[in-house]
Image 1 (tube, rainbow, N blue to C red):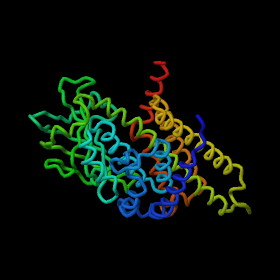
Image 2 (image 1 turned 90 degrees about the horizontal axis):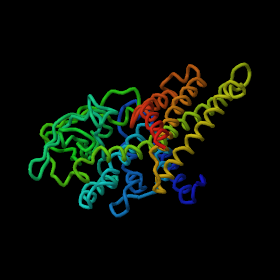
Image 3 (image 1 turned 120 degrees about the horizontal axis):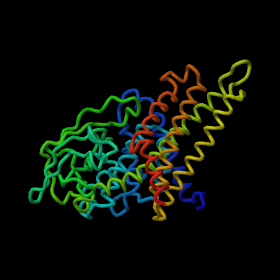
Image 4 (image 1 turned 60 degrees about the vertical axis):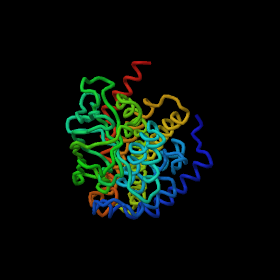
Length: 382
């Protein structure tokens, strides 16, 4: 493929970068310190299309290509990890299942309000207390069909956006016999009776992006809130996660870019032994390695997104991009702190926050170990 962005993609990148620089990045420190979601910026994202990246114009979204969507998430990650994670989860995990598998009526009812910027966001609940990577065998939340409704009982955890969501797409077991066709996806309005959303988890980083545990006690949803056909939930969830991994790769790259820029600026200002520390080879090599790895990660998630746009298989490309970009971000952010020395360990400098935010990237939406399994299976099956 040609990695040169189109004129439209370049314009999009510039518009989003300017918006993030103005509305998101200046508030990143306070978002982290206060553990408060940046609603002020998010309400302005609707008209830009940032809340409907994967939603077609028919339902109020922007419907941009996969590369443009990844560009937007990278720019948000550059500005604020917390805000970027919530917007990535909203688009890739909350809206995508409805666009991919929902009926026209479901799309009209649920998507238009959450992409406008005037309301709440969307969420996806997969993980359970005893089931993270093992969705096929570990999901215990039950959905029992009773006439024209389903009754949901069980628990979920680590659900991004649950407390700020209009609805929560929920993976549930519809066939107790088990197997690959025993799970289904449902749209569950967040105000459903019997759905209890716990207070946000107290986390190491990404504090402005709420993560909640959920309890479902006889939550009733109409049968038409089932996405697609019963028993297709596992396949649907894995398809959604493939795209989500491109977003996490982009987000991690944005975090690394922000850390590099902070380290570069500091290295030019801070002097030791009579010269700026940027003049020392040890510092130069860390900066050079960071710039090289960031560029490589960006090309990898561009490539995965390009394959998605071309309707080519992209599972392995997305896993590779996610694996490399997230582990790269941790290295880059670590070295950015090292370049800052003692100041890098202070919360007054952004690299401390960025490092904490980057740490989740190798865990969420499939750990690095799971990505290696996906990549290896692709190699062995080819």
